[in-house]
Length: 96
Image (cartoon, rainbow, N blue to C red; front, side, top):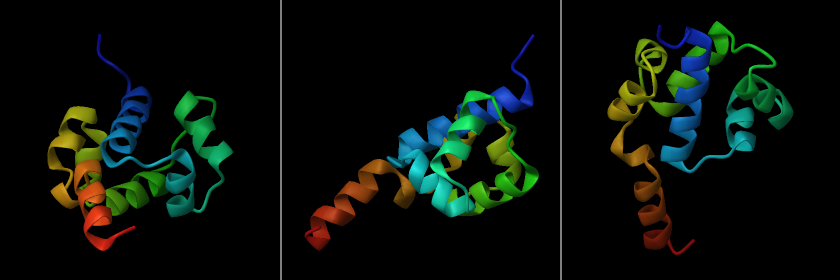
């Protein structure tokens, strides 16, 4: 049997954080949560909400259904300019 939706979403958020180089603190800011609240969601101690899913999808520039489809799909549709390598290149060009 496959992963449940909750576990799949946790893995997807982790994969997107890895792909973009974002921390739990950065994701928490986007959601209006604390880093601890994001950590609890990622550990399974608390559940992600549908509002969280909507906000995460907008933040990452992907559809909510792509986010819910799992880490592979979410990372496949993640815009190139949101990927860690693109962010690093932008920083180097701007002298940050």
